[in-house]
Length: 232
Image (cartoon, rainbow, N blue to C red):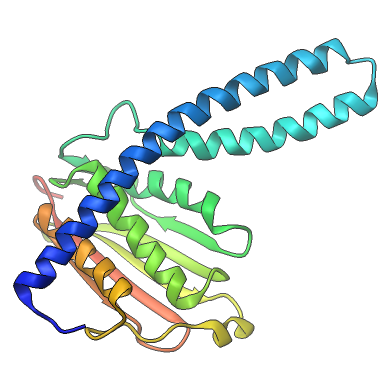
């Protein structure tokens, strides 16, 4: 894909707009799904209490409730937090942890996602929604490169007036190397390149920048850097 400043910026803007539309649709679906699942859990609890003398029914209700509770958590993770979701300043630490909680539910059992972050807040000017999208895109790019059987670490730090989210992803086992994607570079396939353009645009809206690299087979690294609002 040829690099053209104006054209690439347009591609990035379209991709961000598409992702934001999908996010709004997902929020509406999450509200509906969360309400339906909560109602189902209530009915299940009523059935369990009504048939508590039947061990088979109780066991079945408990098993179904556990699965429904997992679905409720996944749906709830999509919903905006009461204290956030709008324009900045935004706590990068909380945004990273919230997004990671959602992503763990989608990675499956083969993937591992760890967050290393300070206890203190790191306030940046970016909007919460932009941060969530950017982190999702970073992890998506990493998983596409190293596969779902991956160990991913999101490290958050603040230093010298800037806050950073650094992603390091590695293939979890030697067998996974057979499924490793190609290196990330400027002339990569169009879908991957458009994702990078969207990331760059999201970072720029918060006054920051993003860097992505695949230094060796089975490894993917990326960093999102944003200016801090006030001192560290």
